[in-house]
Image (cartoon, rainbow, N blue to C red):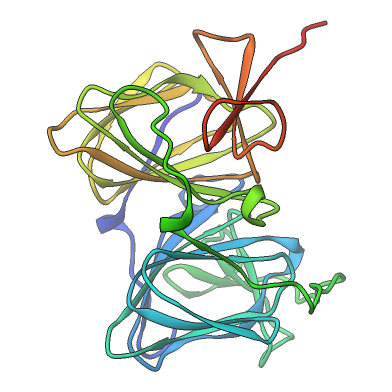
Amino acid sequence: MLMPIVITHAEQPVAEWRKGNRTRLDASEALGTKKLATGEQWFEPGTGAPVHSHPDGLEEIIVVLSGRGEFSVDGQGAELAVGQTLIVPPWAHHGFQAVGDEVLNIWAAFSSPAPPTVYDADPERVILFGAKSGAALDANRRVGDTAYAPTVQSPRSAPLLIANADDQPNAQIRPGNLMTRLLATGSLGSSLLTVGEQIFERGSGAPTHYHPEGIEETVTVLTGRGDFSVDGQHVELEPGQTIVFPVGSHHGFMSLDDVPLHIRAAFSGPSVPTVYDDATDDLIEFGGPTGATLDATRTKRTIETG
């Protein structure tokens, strides 16, 4: 039996990595994940993240929650605002700066529980976000035990991978589901991660299911309240909390309030294979490239048994 891991954001430290920046990690190796890290950052106008890369070939997804930022990926620049998502490919050198008069607020997901980071201005040092080991720099960063450089470089001619939320299809996948929208998935250019948001009316939710192929999932509650289950164990979540669904766990949830349950989820794969406990012969894949189309976000195929 796998235990539910619940992270309350207000209990997590907010670190100032540099002047004008505040960072809080909502899921990481130190908080119990095995494959993912997520967190939120706030940048005062004119501040941002210096150009850096993530060794080990990990991918990063950045969602702009408020404000505007000038982002660069391997020398290509674009301004992003609320409702836009940037997919940072493995090995890419990237950075950003808040522009305008508002604070830039972003949410990010990484395909590693302790993302290693090397800044171009300090290539001999590896910084680990949310790691369990290494010399502590602050409340959520450590220095890696050994410095190393990436052995593979990102393709410098790769296009900027930007997804506009309003351009993505909204599928209502069952009664009471007001929205299911994928913000980053393989079909949008990601190679290692899927990020999406869902909204559920009271009494609706996701029936118990699991994700084969070693998928870990994190779910953050944005509005409403929900009853979440992990291998038969139930916990109630409210805004400002994140739950980790471990690899192989059977999990589900239901909206409890008149205020709709709005969640943001991250998955450790470019698509999300899903098997519901009441339909074990069918594999439903969110963002899947193959199978019969169910709706704008899902495909379906029969599981072959030997």
